[in-house]
Image 1 (cartoon, rainbow, N blue to C red):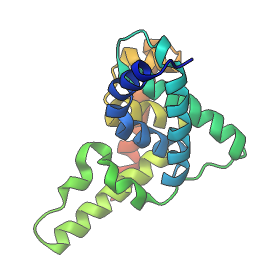
Image 2 (cartoon, rainbow, N blue to C red):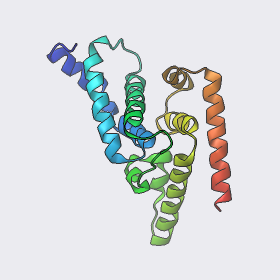
Image 3 (spheres, rainbow, N blue to C red):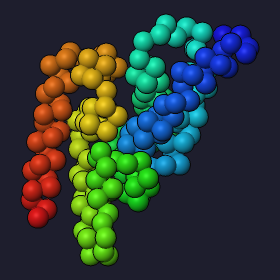
Length: 180
């Protein structure tokens, strides 16, 4: 239970610096910005309620774990199991997805269009990955978490994280290679 000013300050130090990453993860898992904002709001409420119990360590991984759990709770409540929305891929442009693919925008319009098409193809390929692979890829390659942090977050062995990541990357290479 939060206890006032000290918890507000701790929340501001622990959670607020990582809100961008939290929103990015929620967007990838829910498929659109509006749902992601709802999930992150819920996750922030949960993080604030539990801030007194935060034992230190990697604050980013702690928050992303809360966001991940909030996403799956929200998805279970609001979407039938068989439906996964990938939303509007333009929503993802401002997230700096795929480690700056969208920053490839260059000097002329032709290069700009090519870069946007490549970024959109990458985003679509990531969105099409099976959920465990997409989640692992986003946590590692977009959010930059370590293998150990991902294994702890997903409650799976380290080898499973490595395997999922290798398979996700392989599927991306195959998908993007066949698109050319």
